[in-house]
Each structure stands twice: as structure tokens, then as C-alpha cells.
Image 1 (cartoon, one colour):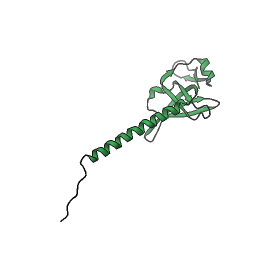
Image 2: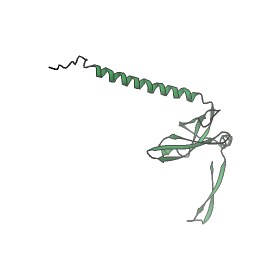
Image 3: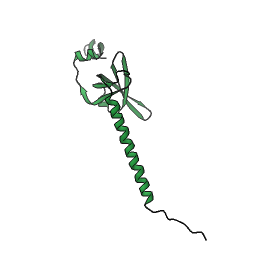
Image 4: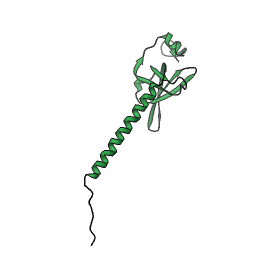
Length: 143
């Protein structure tokens, strides 16, 4: 009494899935190119210092800061503890330094003059050697 009218080709589902995958790939590539073009507009360059990795929920972010007219705190997604307590190049927007990114591919080994020009200060601190000498030992670090 009832006939099934299945005249759709069997390959139609495969074609639809392929089109969806191709569209997804094109959208991802477009977004990556757009991000690269946006980052090329950053004209400011300075030295940034990575401080720690902060964990929240299921994400981890590498915290860093740099100086323009003020101290700018920022973060990037990373779990690599080898990147902590090191200096890297930071590129930022001259009009809004909050828009920035850190170049983690190459660690910088800046001298003291370039660190002072970038806004960093050398601070002294003391640790107590309770074991051998029972004296305070003077140390210093860049902040």
C-alpha cells in the first residue's frame, strides 16, 4: 500500500559532510590570517618579564608584565614552566598597551642598560642563612 520513495542518491550525505569540513577549514584559516594581520599593526616593542603560571579551573596561563608609561600586566595560555622568570620581547599597540602579545620563541638576554630603559628596576633583598654563617646575605633581582 505504501511505497518508500527513496530517490536521494546515497552519496549525498558524504558530499554534505565534505562541504562542512571544507567550510570549517576555510573559516579557521581566515581567522588565523586575520589575527596575524592584527598583530602586525602593533608598532611598540619592549621587554617583558614572565612571572608565573596561574591555574584556574581547567586552564593555565603564563603571567607577564612590561612597562610603557605604567606597568601593564597580561597573560597568555601556556603550561610550560621553563618560560617562567625570563625576559621576552613584547609587541603592543601604541594607543592601547593592553592589546599586546609576547614573543615566546626567543628568550632575551638583556643587559642592565636596556632593562632600565624598558622601565625595570633592580631591587635588593636579604635572605637569612641560618645554617652556616647566621648572617643575612644580600641578593638582587630585576623587577
